[in-house]
Length: 227
Image (tube, rainbow, N blue to C red; front, side):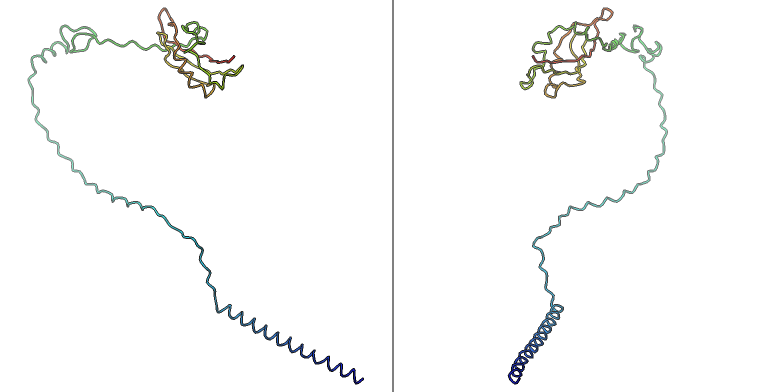
């Protein structure tokens, strides 16, 4: 029993030392934590600014509007009646008055006081008449399938069995010359610019109406087909 008592006494000594060390450690940590919290409240670190610059560019301010001009009252000028002067009519004016404003050798329908000749009047313009496509084709003096009266296709369009169609309205003068070419529907943007130029070279025989040549217009569908 005495030996076991000695062993129990030796075991009690380390346990007490361990408890003392734990207590001291807790006190030190608590003190360090308190110091750190107090230091964080008293010390504030400055945050560095970002590394870029902003430049503000402003325009010239508009000039202020000019002050409104003061209107000055305009005083009406008094009217002064000038004395009228009676002029003695000349011998030539008196003669014209006696003749009724014309000349003795005047022509009926002429200008009063002129040289006695009547002013010729221009003949009224004749509106073009729209005719059938079959009648207009019969009046053609050229071959529309030969140069320079046919549209030339680009090499990329020269393929077998390709057809390009455009709706055209042509007006022709009384002498048989083309006066205007209107393209209502194009065939292709690559050749549409050629169509008015080429068709304006066509020539026709005069179209007679009541035995007189008159201008005419005719609509038709212009087709280009490759072979």
